[in-house]
Each structure stands twice: as structure tokens, then as C-alpha cells.
Length: 386
Image (tube, rainbow, N blue to C red):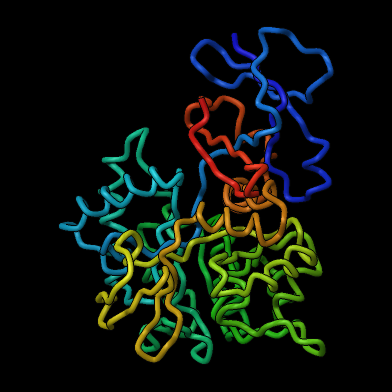
């Protein structure tokens, strides 16, 4: 048996973090048997973590590809590159991803899902896992299409949905759509029957239509502030609607460009327990700066930001846990930042049916992460827990 004391578990609220210090009991194989609030009693045999945080690895709910691979354009001959990408993501601290398909044809989506299914046969314990797919489209608002191919966007309907997901109903975790479009509520109802999380995104929804969507099964907002109406003092839009309640998660690209750091600070104030970090990484992830082919277009990457020729932002190449470290400084709350990248996405996928502690019990501590805050430069860092 092994006991570790003075461990913090990530919390979305700083006041909760200051008072939540835990001790862990592990068996001889490093499996966590229990998590308890720490007491003042200490044995000389106890291992003291001095307030460092313990977390699972990250989960990325929105990632479009990397190392030259785009999930929307998968073919079977790309499986070796896809496995290399999953190995890279594991080294970057990511345990699992929801491979994200932007708006595309039914044939493209079906082929991509078949490739992912085959790739899952090669997943190992030290490789990032492929979770359920994220369908970002095609039921989006054309005027908020962003970097999506407008020719691939279509009206929401049950027939259009079934044509795409037939045979893969159990392999999809999340779908982004514009709930204000006619026919969307039929699609939302069907997705909820299939236990698929529905997220508002690429949408012209105002406060009332967003609230109506949240009341009818939509439980998340995709890349908050981007491709939607923003916060205005007389029209607070879908973000204001989401932050007025506590059951809607807010996906956030925290590179400081998609959303300004000061706006991220404001979002943390108005929705302290709802933010979920996503990378929105595209196929250029891991390739550095330069110009790359992206679907049928050329994309330029500079300092991790991806720009189309018309200057539309088309995602990022910033690793998710690098974004986590950035946001820790911006909001002055490292615990919350860790929670946003590691616990919050698990809450989304479990649809709030699990507690934070349940993501630790039964896990080998070597599969988890240990986070430290440097007292000199106030920089957050992570390493493998052991």
C-alpha cells in the first residue's frame, strides 16, 4: 500500500480549490483505491505532494486532424499516419479525442468513419484513444459558415441525418448544428434518442432561439464567440443565454487569438463552471509554421494560427495542454484551467452523470498527470504522475 497526501484535484472555482486537499491510497500496482479529504494526521511513511494537482490526461472534443492528416479526408492508406498522430497526442498529454468532421458529403463521412473503425483495432494502452466522432456540420447557418465549405452545408432533416450516420449511430459522440434552422429540432430529438451530445455552433441564434434550443436538448456551445452572435449590451445572444444557466458547457479555443485573453477572463467570471477547452487543431498540427494544403485550399500557419487566403481563421495548431497553461495565467486560476482541459470534457461526454472523483478511482496513477505551479515565474507545468 502507498499513501500520498496534500494532493489537489482540479476544481472549476478557485475558492473550492483552496479548501480541497486530498489523500490517496494506492495498491502495490499503483491503482488508486480511495480518495479522501486530508486530515492533519501525517505518518512519516506518507508521500507529500505539497499541494500539486493530480488530473487525468486531457480529452479533446474538437480536433480536426494533425501531422498532415485531416479526419474529413480520411482514406485507409492514411491509417499509419493517423496512428503516428495518436502517438504524438499521447506524448502531448491527451488521452482521447473526438475526431471532428467538418461539413462534408455523406460519402466522405461514411468513408472516414470506416477508417476510424479500422484504426481503433490498433489502439494500445500508451496511445491516444479515438472516442466517438464529432460531426461539426453539415446542418449549419450559411452566414456563419466560417471556414466550412459552403457547398457541403445543407438543411437539417432526419433523412439527411440518417444518410450520413447509418451504421455508425453508436460511434458518434457529438454533433454541432444551428438550432434556429427549420428541421433542426427533429434532428436534435433523434440525436438525443441516440445519446449523442448536441452543441450549438455556426449559428445565427439569438438569445430566445438559443434558450429554446437549450430547453430542448442542446447542452453545449461549439468554439464560443466564433461563428455566432457575440455578447452585446442589448443583445446578449447565445453566449448570454448559455451563461444564464448552469447546465450548458461552453467549448473554448484558448489560444488568445480566437478569443481575446480579456474576454476569456470575462467568460470565466460569468460562467465559472461551464468552460471546456478544445484545441480545434487542424491537419497542420505538429508541422510548425508554413503553408499547407487543407482540403482543396491553401492554409497559412503563423505562430500556431491557421489562416485561409480570405483571412478567415481556420483553427489552430496549439497543443491543448499548452492552451491550458496559457489560460491558467490569463484567469489566474491554474486549478480551473486544468479542470477545463481534463475534467470538463469528461463531464460533457458522461452528460454530467459522473463526479470528478469517479475519473480517478481505479486508475493507475502512472496514467495520470501531476501539475505544478512554479512559485518564481508563476508558470504552470505538467509531468507524468508516478
